[in-house]
Every structure is written in C-alpha cells, then in structure tokens.
Length: 351
Ligand SMILES: NC(=O)c1ccc[n+]([C@@H]2O[C@H](COP(=O)([O-])OP(=O)(O)OC[C@H]3O[C@@H](n4cnc5c(N)ncnc54)[C@H](O)[C@@H]3O)[C@@H](O)[C@H]2O)c1
Image 1 (cartoon, rainbow, N blue to C red):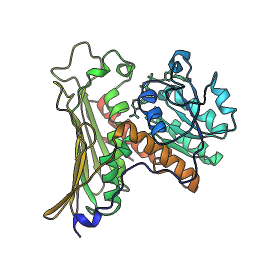
Image 2: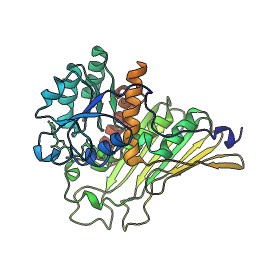
Image 3: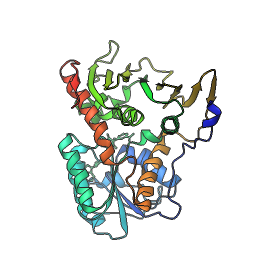
Image 4: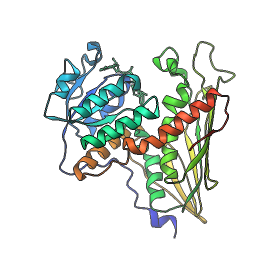
C-alpha cells in the first residue's frame, strides 16, 4: 500500500444528521468565551442557557453568541426539561459535584478537562453515568485538532501499521500564565496543560499497555522570576511491548516561531505534523508521502469535535470515543506523571 490508499481522511468535526438538542453551559470563563461558544455558533449547536456563579461572567454575551437565556442558578438549568446536554467548564474541584448533580438530574454531560483530581472521583462519575444510562464525555478538544484528528484516523486505518514511538515537542512560551489562576495549580504544565498531549498519546497508542511513567518539571534558565509555575517538562511513557512516548516542553522563550511538532513511528510508516501554531500532517510509507489538506484549527473547531462526538453518541446510543471511561487511562498517566515529578522523576509503575 502507498500513502494514496489513505487519501480520503476527513478530519473535520462530525455531527448527527437530525439531532441538535438544547445545550446549557455552566462556568462561563475564558475558555468558554474564546472557544466553546464560537464553536457552537459555527456548527449550529443551540445554546439554550448559560450559568456562572459570578453574574459579571455572563454580561454582554447573550446576543453575541445567540444564547437563549442567562440562568440565575444551576438548579434552573437542571430543572429545564428542554435541556438535554450540560457542558460544564469550571475547574475540576468545582466541577465534580456539578457533574454529579447534572447526571442525577438526567442530563448528558460534557466535562472540561482534566476530568478529576484523582482516579476515585473520576471512576465514581463513570459509574454514576452508567447507572443513570447517560453519556459522560470529556472535552479533550485536542483530539479534534485537525492534524491530530487526521493522525488518529490514519492510525485507525492501519496507515503506519502498529505504533512504536510517539514524540511531541511543545515549543510555546507560557508567559501568558503569569498572574493567572493557572499558576496556582500544582504542576500546572503537566496536569492542566499537557493533559491534552498525554491524552492524544494514549489515544494513538490504543490498547498498548503502559507500564511506567516518568515526569519532570523545572524552571527554565530564562523563565521570568515573577512566573510561579515551572515551564519546562519532560514526560516519558514506557509500554509493555517496548513502545515508548516522549513529551517535551521547552518553555518556548524567547518566542516566535512557536510550534507543536509530533512524530508517530509505526511498523510500516511514519506520520509527522504539528498540532498548533503551524498546523500540518504528512503520511510517509516507503519512498512516498502525502500531505493532507486540513480545514479549521484546534481553536475553536476542536470544541465542535468534542460536542459533535457526544451528540453523535447520544443519537446512535453508543459510547462516545471521548467518553469519561476512555479518559480514565489519560488521567491515570497524567496523575502518574505528576506523582513522578513530585519525586524528581522516579518511574511510577502503572499496574
Ligand atoms: N483547551 C481546553 O480545552 C482548555 C483551555 C483552557 C482551559 N481549559 C479548562 O477549562 C476549565 C476552566 O478554565 P478557564 O480558563 O475558562 O477558567 P476561568 O476561571 O476563566 O473560568 C471558570 C469559570 O467557572 C465559574 N465557576 C466556578 N464555580 C462555579 C460554579 N459552582 N457554578 C458556575 N460557575 C462556576 C467561574 O466563575 C469562572 O467564570 C479548567 O478545567 C481548564 O483546565 C480547557
């Protein structure tokens, strides 16, 4: 087979043909305004209501994003029978009880990432959704970054055989975190940010069993003294069959060019590309290669991808590929990388 045999990859978000239920969004912070709402406008997802505990967070957005109404309480959303899906985008410490309440009220839920602070509460959410017969998906929107989505589809089609190595470089300055709430999150760069890279690696490696994770985060030599959270990191994952993954963030200074290149080596070929900044993906087999034409970008189209997959799963009554159950594996690796970083990079064995 040649790369041309894998030419028909459509990496765009997919939506069910005849199902556009009312969605409500809870926690109207930076990411909802910059990405959730623009994506839902673009893809025709009806936003019936929004709610934030801080009234100023929802000021002036109703007309801009064609929002049905600004709710006065979370309960108002839960009590609205016309709302079928609740998109909850607060930080995990506030989110877990909200996700539980929404599931108990009979709503399907899209939860922002990281799914939880620990595995026990993540598992409880999965079990609760199962008991109630509801779908619980995680907003790992990076999975619908066009180059990453194309790579996922190529792996699924067997375009490079079995994956044997995944390598990511994050070369972006984290200067934008200075003075934000992100700096207060322990091991922010691993837990809150690189969770997308860990999640896509877990997705690409499929059923391969991870056996050990090493994580290290550190201040880079030129990191501004006023920045509070380490910008540099390395995360390594070993798999039972000898496959490996490496994720490295440089801290990105002193600025342009920025990029997020990745390589996937397989038994029959190679995929390489870049997920953010400069976006592309190419497939190599033997002497030939193919460069894919991609539409859209991670921000905001990835947010259409996660919601589209949840809606498709509801319409088809199947598990979404971004289900909380699937996400347990990503969360486990993320928490292991954090635990390793806490202990200066010792390997954490994955049982
Ligand atoms: N690519 C991505 O998917 C991406 C990017 C950035 C942030 N995030 C994630 O999104 C989440 C939010 O990040 P952010 O940067 O938007 O934060 P933010 O602080 O800007 O927004 C959080 C919002 O939640 C609201 N809130 C808190 N408790 C609430 C409650 N009980 N009920 C209703 N509203 C409540 C706050 O008032 C605030 O407006 C985090 O988990 C973060 O990791 C994801």
